[in-house]
Length: 256
Image (tube, rainbow, N blue to C red; front, side, top):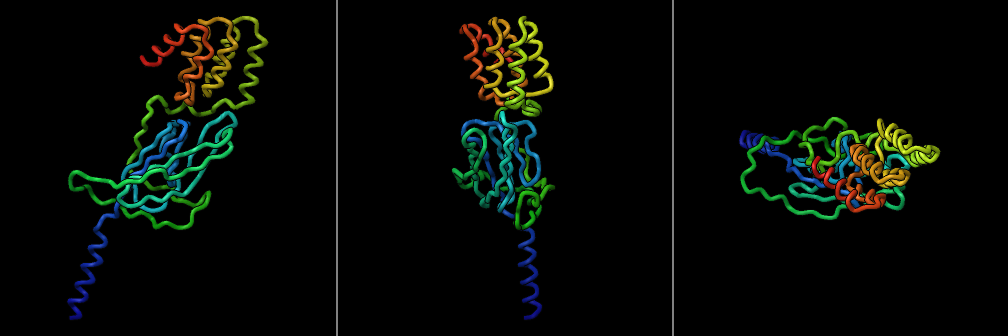
């Protein structure tokens, strides 16, 4: 009896060790399409900002999600703890409040994960048990989950770095206003964007400093690569006087 009991216990614990811990899937998106950089459990997921992130095969349990949202006032950093249910697909929505001073994240949907065929993949490595998290103490070396799907391919790897802030934009506009020639204004603006990125609303303000439609159009094409929130690029259309310019700009973007 003792040997049978020992054998039973051994088989039980062996079975517990080989059963894979159920994984989960998570989607993180911004409510108004704001672009953000995303850090999950201390690991950078997307260094180029996007507005949607999907993660697959994540160990269920508590995780730390950090959002870095660029704005004219700098970068808003929001860190929160999220819980992922085993075998479920969770959707979380990021909402930026006011003028970019505050943000919060809430779970808006959850549904079961269905598989059309048996899962024959090797089991995931055991993930550290959830403990006490704060702003600095959380895992930084977990590589067990797959890389995300970034649904907005318009976002490159660098266009949201060094975003021109409110004061820098004001100084640039003042400097452009002191120049008489169109070429001098354009030269200053191009120099400002050569090593920096910009928000679409600020780009529109720069375009409005130019007198000629051709200059606005050419600079908008040039500045597209440096625009951080390309989802909002449509606002620059207000700076043009003719519909033909807007159509040409749209055609230029679509052909990229």
